[in-house]
Amino acid sequence: MMSSKLNFVRNIAFLPQRMLSANATMQEPEAPKIVTKLPGPKSLDLIKELDAVQNSGAVQLFIDYEKSIGNYIVDVDGNTFLDIYSQIASVPLGYNHPAMIDVIKNPKNISTLVNRPALGVLPPRDFVQRLKSSLLVIAPQGLSEVQTMACGSCSVENALKAACFWYQQKKRGGESPSDEELESCLWNQSPGAPNLSVMSFSGGFHGRTFGALSCTHSKSIHKLDVPSFDWPIAPYPRYKYPLHEHKQENKAMDDRCIAVVEDLFEKYKKKDCPVAALIVEPIQGEGGDNHGSSYFFKEIRRVTRKNEAAFICDEVQTGCGATGRFWAHEHWNLQTPPDMVTFSKKMLSGGFFYKPEFRPDKPYRIFNTWLGDPAKMILLEAVIDVIFKQKLLDQIRDSGDYLLDNLIEIEKKYPQLVENARGKGTFAAIDFKTSELQSEGIKRLHKHGIHCGGSGNRTLRIRTTLTFSKKHVDVLIDRMNRAFYEM
Ligand SMILES: Cc1ncc(COP(=O)(O)O)c(C=O)c1O
Ligand SMILES: *[C@@H]1O[C@H](CO)[C@@H](O)[C@H](O)[C@H]1NC(C)=O
Ligand SMILES: *[C@@H]1O[C@H](CO)[C@@H](O)[C@H](O)[C@H]1NC(C)=O
Ligand SMILES: *[C@@H]1O[C@H](CO)[C@@H](O)[C@H](O)[C@H]1NC(C)=O
Ligand SMILES: *[C@@H]1O[C@H](CO)[C@@H](O)[C@H](O)[C@H]1NC(C)=O
Image (cartoon, rainbow, N blue to C red; front, side, top):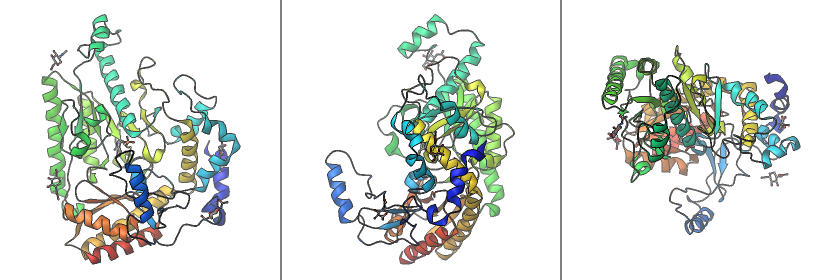
């Protein structure tokens, strides 16, 4: 099924001068180049203008996306950075990738690009084909159905709802909801609005909408002043590195966390607020690049099954290849797959995959106006073709191994600054010793032309595109050396 639509990718894959851009004069730079103070004068002017109409406190730089290419971004002041943050982990192939430009240029795609349908009621003629040649090609094993959504939070929010529907449907044993349920839910009262909970993990991040936010525990600024559900929060493992030197301690850590998960299931059952679903990230992406072992996740799968709760794997940040497998949960070799997998970011479209038993029994239960965007799906189709045709997952595993070896060298060279190098694929990180060193380190890396960001309160978060290769690792490590040498 893949081969016919791969033709256009094959054409560009073997034509080096076309490979870099639709604009033949554009080439990925060899190295970063910083020519002004950061932010430069043009960025500062634009920040000021923006600040007149909204809070621009998070804006770092204004970017010239026309000039940005591959793994490099260029700002409005002409500074060129190697980008290891990729728009908060959301750029699949790099900037201005030719395969994506071809999609936009193809006149056959115009109607998909200009008309945004209400997908739940009036999908386009080729919608089933679009699903089959994009999302369903990379559906996680055992999850044969998919629901598209707009963003990551929206995907999580709706997966949580689908879990609650499923839980209550099981409880009703196929009966229709009672009149009392139909009436009481309109008043936010049980039994129609039942006492159910969702278990999540300390340090986790699942988005900022109301339901998802009750599962988010990474930073106070995300949660302050917002009412939350009283839902159980379990500890997520925090391993000692290097892993091979701390096997027993880390296993004991897993066992302690799992024991708490089991206790919380019991506690919330006793509170008459049973856990309908457990949501977890394969690697905590915002909360500090905390990894969980295969053993930990196998145990989580076992405990969720025992308690008849849905197991939702939030792969918004880990999905789409960065860990060297298309889905990070594939690293665990689970015997029973997760019940739902949420995605967004590098997938371009949000949404979630699910087992057929999680399909809502009625229309309009999982619904909104757009329910995603076919324009993003035709781009995703091109992205998936490039990933497979150019064997980018193999490349990510290679550059990831090379990156980790180099990060370990950096750690040995600057033991007063950094520790705990870790990663899967290029989804990698290193901890600074303190929060102060984290902000200082990130600032200095920016000055040396590495666009990067943090996670947790002391971690450098590395989130590359899928075209990040060993030559990019060399540039990164060279710049890290320059930055850390100064500190
Ligand atoms: C694991 C995870 N889930 C959910 C989200 C929320 O996605 P969005 O910011 O698109 O709403 C994020 C965003 O960083 C995430 O990392
Ligand atoms: C190609 O890129 C160069 C450099 O950014 C730019 O000057 C030129 O106008 C572009 N050409 C086309 C046809 O887009
Ligand atoms: C959209 O553009 C791509 C790239 O040119 C092409 O392969 C694809 O067939 C187009 N889609 C449709 C529906 O024609
Ligand atoms: C749900 O919880 C509320 C408040 O904690 C309680 O008043 C209500 O009786 C509970 N309902 C059920 C069905 O357990
Ligand atoms: C980071 O936050 C964790 C959890 O809140 C806390 O225990 C730790 O001391 C903090 N570390 C630093 C370096 O501030």
